[in-house]
Length: 139
Image 1: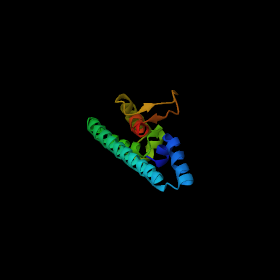
Image 2: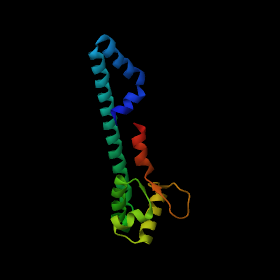
Image 3: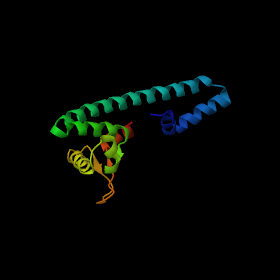
């Protein structure tokens, strides 16, 4: 969602536009290149936002099915949008829950494929809200 991504992907066109300004005083070519970068980047941002909204709707629907845990599950989900990589201890204070409750909630998120454990350790595990992070790498 940055112009620099577009420029990096279109390096040769970028350098050509700069060269044409320097050698031919063709500022119009540079402006067209820059405006294309803005349009493509903006469209990518809109698509990313739509994908996040879609994921949020899906996750909100899933969290309703947590029954008695739905309130804490909803709080955890909101936290994950701010910090998509967490450990159990990261959520104790923000959710206001005990360690066993946090552990149980994270395990349930894992079973529903919301979170994915990435360290492979038995202790000091890290969990990733992978589908959320993937949205950013798609565009």
